[in-house]
Amino acid sequence: MVTEPHKIDILLVEDDPGDVELTKEGLLDAKMLVTLHVAEDGEKALKFLRKEAPYTEAVRPDIVLLDLNMPRKSGLEVLAEIKADPLLRAIPVVILTTSEAETDIVKCYDLGANCYISKPISFEAFTKVVAMIEEFWFTIVKMPPKK
Image (cartoon, rainbow, N blue to C red):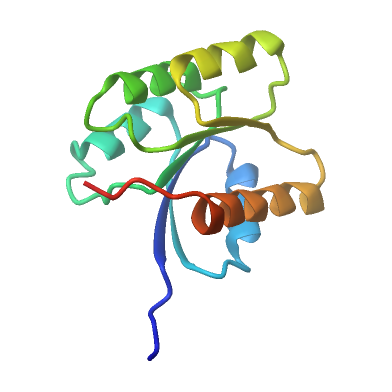
């Protein structure tokens, strides 16, 4: 019996095109069929998650990779809104940011982040971290069903 690869939808909330490309590189060797959706700012991310125009056909992501330093609406604000919304709060949110500030780490966990990862500086380390995120969240962790 042949089984289809598990399809994974990831929403990357990231305004840096270089980090978007590094994330794509990290997912290239995925053992699963991964679709990466990108929102360049916090407002677009929330519209995507809520299926508001122009994202009325958006899929519910299996996981959100969220940068903190975002234009228009910060990652902290996006995280707070996701975790306050009964329709969105079950979606795992992984903070993937350059900040190593203890105050940011504490605030993110207080708001309900599922984990906090500081972005590595080198290309190899960054792509390895992305691959490890995928491996952990989609082969080890039991995920909530999509609604």
